[in-house]
Image 1 (cartoon, rainbow, N blue to C red):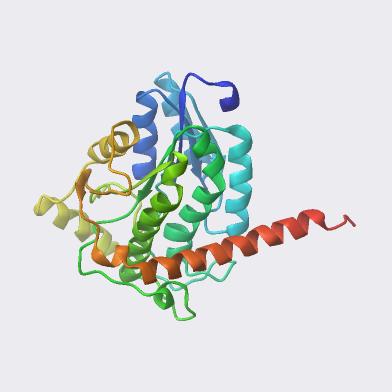
Image 2: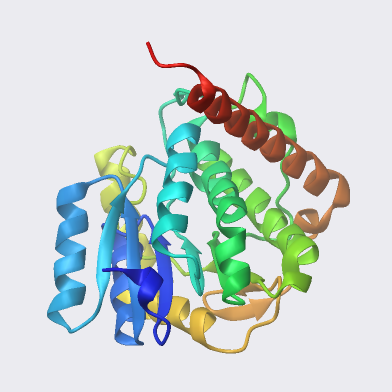
Length: 296
């Protein structure tokens, strides 16, 4: 698929597109006429998603990337800009909650690396393509409540640890980033929203959790009727991708609601943005240095 030559069709990039919500969103957006670039780590699952889109008459391709790696996110940006100088919709869907305390190759706690840092860096890198199309960014968060708080130390400090609490903090920070992105870049024609798609048991989310919890969680969600199907969630992605939205809006299961107070805290927002920007700048400097180094 040569997306650069397609001017009549719109393009959506979906991360974490090889299973679960990302797969459902990719299929639903393709049915609305979007060309799809599906981003993920598993080439076999990626090929399956692309086959499903094409079987329905859609246009799609898969791009492999490791969103836990700063260097690979930077590489991904270069690949995507080459393929797509115009991006109508970027869905930062990739995410997960982890039990084991592990760091990425860059020394970042994995929850923060995947749910927050990768989404921010990918958006920053694709801004020229988003601006060219007056595009839209959908940052996928979770069901954040008004009392929730976080600190930069919990996210980026040496004692940052995994767990559901860290997942919530990372998503709270991503919501704060969404508000700041709209403030910084909205005047350039790009719009930003945050979406909590709902609780969807039929996904690979929380794959590191103990087996008993993976079984009990979906049962409880269905028992109390707080679960959504992948199809319902995908429809929420499509709504925010295709309909009029409130810029910087927090859409809870597709419905606009006020963002938690802490997400709007200017001190927290500035600290998170500063930490992300510092890491991003360091990565770009390393790539420039590596490309300039003489070959052996």
